[in-house]
Image (tube, rainbow, N blue to C red; front, side, top):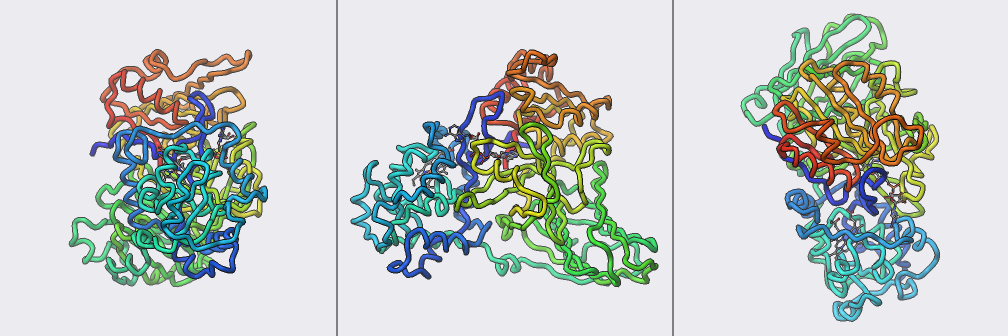
Amino acid sequence: MEAEMKKRHPSETRPGDQNGEEENRQRDLYDTGDIQEKMKKVDVKTSSPTSLLAKNSLILPTGVIGPSEQKAKTKTKTVSSASATGNPRNKTALAPGHSLMDWIRLGNSGVDLTGVGGIPRVVTLSELANHNKQTDAWIAIRGIVFNVTRYMDFHPGGVDELMRGVGKDATKLFENVHAWVNYQSILQKCVVGKLSRGSSSASSAAPVTEKSAAGANNCSSVTLGFSKSFAVPKVVEKNSDLPNVNLDWRQTSNSITLFYQAIRNYPGIYYQLQRLSDSKFIFRLTFEKHIVTHELELIADVEWPPTCKRNFDTMQVDFTFTKRTKDIWKSQGELRENTLSRGSVANKRTYKEYEVLNNTPICKLVNLLILRAKDSLELIPIGRHIEVKMNIMGMEVSRSYTPVPPCLHPEDMAPNYQPDCVCLMVKRYPNGALSPSITALQPGQTLIMSNGLGAFVIELFDRYPVIHMLAGGTGLTAMLGIIQRALARRSVALINLLNFNKDEDNMFYVSQLDKVSMEKKFKITHILSQAGDKWEGRRGVVSDVLLRELIGEYSLEGCIFICGPKGFMLSAKKCIQKLGWASYQIYEFDS
Ligand SMILES: Cc1cc2nc3c(=O)[nH]c(=O)nc-3n(C[C@H](O)[C@H](O)[C@H](O)COP(=O)(O)OP(=O)(O)OC[C@H]3O[C@@H](n4cnc5c(N)ncnc54)[C@H](O)[C@@H]3O)c2cc1C
Ligand code: HEM
């Protein structure tokens, strides 16, 4: 199967931290619900606009993206330009003092951003139409009217773009451009009131419900006896489209191990395991088109968490539980299987609370966080990312981060790491909206994090024995899982990592990478664009000459992964294409 060259989602570029053009980002502020429904419940006359939205933001159904929003997202992936609209990219560089953080501060400064003294009112369409100037700009989205006059210069799409929606019900336009933007949160201090007529477009974004998902459901129940192998029920096997996995088990008096093995080569399986009690668990396997859940009830209690092993050659995954009481069990217990069609649940983001177990700097600017959710274990597929949500001075801000393996070399195991932990490496941007808060978290504090997102499927590149990687700054995080897997795979002959950074302060995980590079098949080159005098390694930025030397011309044998800030990605892709590499050999990371 050929992998398409992937384009980064407009909202998903990493900030320009090194070696590429500096990119100002106000992004990843995802739409989390249908505010109009909430406004119906609010007495507009008696509530202040701010409190209305503050209330709403608390009860928004987080993480549910309605079909229309998803449509808009998909659209952005298919256009050849990087614009959400399909037009050439129209992201403007914001003037200094107009970052998201500056906007949050302005909102908290006490300045009246509503322009109507903060008293909510009902706005008619004709009144709305009067506020259609840059200096007096109202906009209606999903039945709520916002005063965006002060937001104009903070709008990442620029003044002209925002002006297209001003003075009218801009719900459709907004959704066509960037349905994922969490305007409720950004404009929470700008609410003028309710639009007296203008609710129609909101109804298109009906959230996916559990009920609708359950509609496409195959169910069966199997008693696990002594038979060594449990196969997926017949009803599932008949349909060639449905996934086919074997679940085997083995026990000792101390432990019970469950082995998952995809019978046909199903790529990118996402394993999620949830503990319901000491003997009851749900295994959720997400495939490209389906989600299979196994509800397992063991005959006796086991310890949590299980250890987990992945064989990167055979794709077998096993979970070993320690038995509470040493014994040989006569049967394992009950297993119930459900198969859901993924179409009905694919868009669902779920958020969980994670406890910070550890948060330590691994260099001047980057922290390693070890996080654990209660009673849950996730094997997020390699190259996917999660979304972190935090309340920053009253505004919900979300950003993407790529889970990294707990180590590349056993001697460098992340502190306090348990099999049910997720590790993140987060770079601190002193003026950033979110990263200063994440990197300041203390053990015991909590962080809201989503399930794994994105579509990268590493198995699609398994036919290439040579893997080249171009990492810019924190783009390295996307490479670490790939490196870990490639090191364990016999079919991989060479991993060639080019690690680009601005200077020594921005480098991270270097000694660990260098240690692994003692292995013959892993080659690493650190390249700094603004190195200090003492730097003895390579200097420079991504260029034709450099890549010709370090990667070489097109070869049938190789694939190339790129991850980094936007400017870096663009330059890297251009150079690689000049060297003759085909687009299907290249993967640019996004969500
Ligand atoms: C799929 C994906 C995976 C990612 N994985 C990781 C990861 O594993 N680790 C990681 O550290 N990051 C990762 N990122 C980047 C991360 O999502 C955030 O973008 C990053 O943490 C910065 O967020 P922030 O809110 O702190 O900064 P922002 O507020 O977004 O700003 C970023 C930087 O730009 C500057 N800036 C903002 N606005 C302006 C302006 N108007 N003028 C001048 N400068 C400005 C800020 O000062 C700051 O230095 C990933 C991004 C994506 C899309
Ligand atoms: C309805 C009229 C609007 C139009 C036509 C419009 C247009 C655009 C465009 C073209 C971009 C650049 C997308 C890109 O990266 O290529 C953008 C970005 C953005 N806009 Fe708007 N916009 C509108 C309204 C709004 C409103 C009301 C908000 C309020 C919060 C908003 C918030 C944002 C944000 C946060 C981004 C950055 C998104 C990202 O990086 O993913 N926009 N907009």
